[in-house]
Structures are given as structure tokens and as C-alpha cells.
Image (tube, helix red, strand yellow):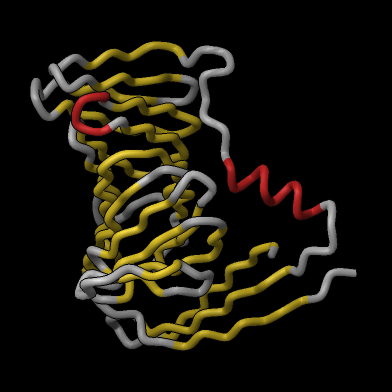
Length: 229
């Protein structure tokens, strides 16, 4: 029988505290926006706007935004800044990615789009599930739609396309922007799901992170996140 470990974290939902790490494995470094040095990223770490997450060859991390549980699964060999501002109880979200890949499950955004920024592209997301693969300034980007809709704009040409389920957009540093059907076997492998399935065969513990926070209107809310360790 799995042992239930309840971790209670209480803090105030503010313009600074925007997300929470729910999983971290392997080589994952974290640098807070006002810090000059990095440290190992651990489960339960609160994230602030402009925090840096950098994963190594065997590392991955999962974090969720506090207002709506929009989830980002950062895969190995990735580097990104987590950004967000609180406006009327909602977080205006942005991921600024230098290189790497991640899988996103973004809830419906009422107050505005969830923005993804790479050296080549800008993606606006209202609510959907998709993959982003960025190969830096010289390699360009790939966006794989799993559900919903993502609007992609190439920075150089200002060309725009929309990615839906089973579609792939390829955004190039020279300004090219191609939309086509996703090919068999083309989707990236989700390291976080492989690790979870492997752990499920053993005697892993279920951890529940329960967060109490207060929105801008003074309303008390609970956020419950479950993870298998």
C-alpha cells in the first residue's frame, strides 16, 4: 500500500510568487531572479518572475502556475526563464526559452494569452496542450499541437500560423514558417512520464502538496497538487 505524505505549504499569493515546482529529478539548476548563484531545484520550491531553470542531460522538472494549475514539463538539456505578473487575481504568464524542449498543458486563459518566447518565435496560447522544441538562435523551433490552438509568429518575417491538434509548425531563423501534419514518430518523448511509469512499478510514495493562498480580492483558496515520488 502506498504511503500518503501530505506536505502543507502556506503562503500568500502575490505578484512575486507565481508558480510551484511539483517534480524535479536529476541535474536541475535553479537561479532566483535576484540571486548571483544557482542551486539544485527541489520539489515544493516556489517560483518567482524571472527565475531561471536549467536542466542537464538527465534532468527534468515540472511546475504549475498558482492561479489555474497550467503545467509546464521541462525536459532534459533545456534552459528557460519563468515569468508572470498578477493582475486581478490572474497571472499573465510567459516562458522565455533559450533552448531545449517542454510540454505544456495550459488551462483556458481568461485575462490574456499565455506567451512563449524563443530566439526565433513568439507563441500565444489561450488554452491547449502542445510541445515546444527550440534549437536556439541558429536552429529555430518546432511546435507540435496536441489539442486546442496555438498561434505562432516568426519574429523575423512576422508570418503567423495556427497550430491545432496533430499539426506541426516549423519556425526558422531566416523567417520561414511552415505548417504541416505531424508525422508518425515525430513527437518528443516525455521523460517525466517515463520516470513516473517506472516508479509506479515500485513502492513509490504519493505526495500531496496542499497550498493555501489569498487572491487580490482577499478570498482564501486551496490548491492541491499530487505527485508520485
